[in-house]
Image (cartoon, rainbow, N blue to C red; front, side):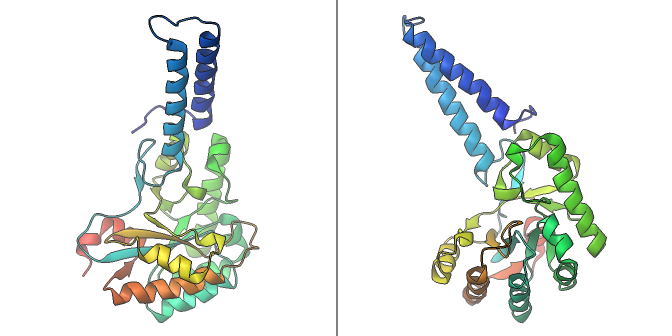
Length: 274
């Protein structure tokens, strides 16, 4: 785990300085004996920069702090998660499907959308689904200062709690992006950072068949699936493909013997599921 609380952008800035310094030293033919140390510095700086960037964007990387992407279990359980809502009419359509098949899901909600759709948020909670925090304005937290990150998370938890009576204890940073400071802020609030192990890129609307195929072929015991019922704060792009794909994914995985559970259940109670 990366314990030094430094912003990724600061680390990359320092590495850029090292790379440029190494290149300048080599250009001026300094530190070339017995080896070209300047070039070595530049290459090492680039490699470290790539590594740190991947640590910030790859869902299953714990270098900057503990994230949850799936559960190790022998049981055929899977968690459906939906980002960026609530977004009418697609969230309602999705809830109808989940109710039809008696499937619980986890919704990572955008705070601004929560305030616009309080009744829809109440329905999500009332029908037994788990609610998660997805920040208030769906901002890239890597580009936000510490105060903004805290406000984005706190405001969202507050509006969800005001509507449902309970604040979420799981969070998904927009795009899954995080660095040591993001992880520190989440830990201070006892929020579990939940990423995913199965992604279909459904937000690009590639077609229902593509979404279903990309999802089903990657699922295994304990998977957390990422889908979208919303479109950030813009709420412009259609999500009908994701809704219909969710129906097909549920049908296919149920036929294969999978049981659907919430994120809490798959992370904390997997071995107790009957």
